[in-house]
Amino acid sequence: MNDIHKPVGVYAPTVTCFHDDETIDQKGIRAYVRFLLDSGVHGIAPLGSAGEVIAMTEDERKQALEWILEEVNGQVPVYAGTGHYSTRTTIDLSRHAERSGATGLMLMAPYLLRPPKSDVLDHFRRVREATPLPIMLYNVPLLTGVEVTPREIKQLADEGVLQAVKWSHVEVSRIHDTRMLCGPDFSVFVGIDVIGLEGLAAGANGYVGGLAMMVPSLLRKVFDTIHVDHDLVSAREQWARLLPLIQFEYRSLFTDNGEPHWLAVCREAAELCGIRVGRPRLPLRPLKPELREELRKLLADLGVI
Image 1 (cartoon, rainbow, N blue to C red):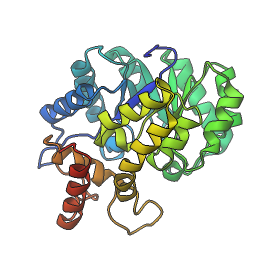
Image 2: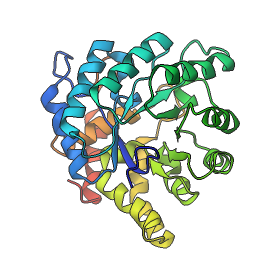
Image 3: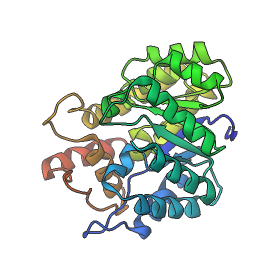
């Protein structure tokens, strides 16, 4: 199932563990990775948006990735998040990932300044020229302000630039369209929990999302029920149990002042499972006590704590 050329399955993002002084915590990072591996994930997709990389220096990102790769030790594929606005920095981080033993790269579009689409596509082409590692596009227009369309993905796939995409988009049609255009050799991942079941039912090859961090063993069961057992009825029943957690995670998705923040939820879930990941880096703060208690009850109802 873990073909280096076609990633498939549940790939878990990672939060970055911090000490109270906001320095990165090696012990916590390694413990978190072990938790994910012990939960049966098919792969790891570290240092994406959940890793708070926008709040980290390039040296910290490199160090954290090295610890993650050492802990994984080849047990599952690792698609390293090396995305950055700067093409030069993205290439530097990507070459470091290659030297350190990553299986592939997970790259979001250049963010904040929203360069012209032709420049965005050339950004990925230049990374491809710099490293042979397979590239999974992390397509998250809500955070980057830029969407690479299914037809543009096909263009880059035909050029050999992209080998996979993580669709963090609430429209499941993006998964349908990409699979139709890019064919069976191109790997399509669902990347946001609000359409997780629909994405897998639509034929997504894999899953990278918040549930893979909070309840990886339960998500692995849903994935196997669809992809191995071909039992959509049972998968729907399992998903119904997960819906309250998903609704809590994304309660404030389309607001600018709502709580809880999805990343604070994912970090707190790890803490409640006994893994000390520490506080997020400011300006993001941990969950308020009443929200932490609400999350604790949700996880207890699912039997994971």
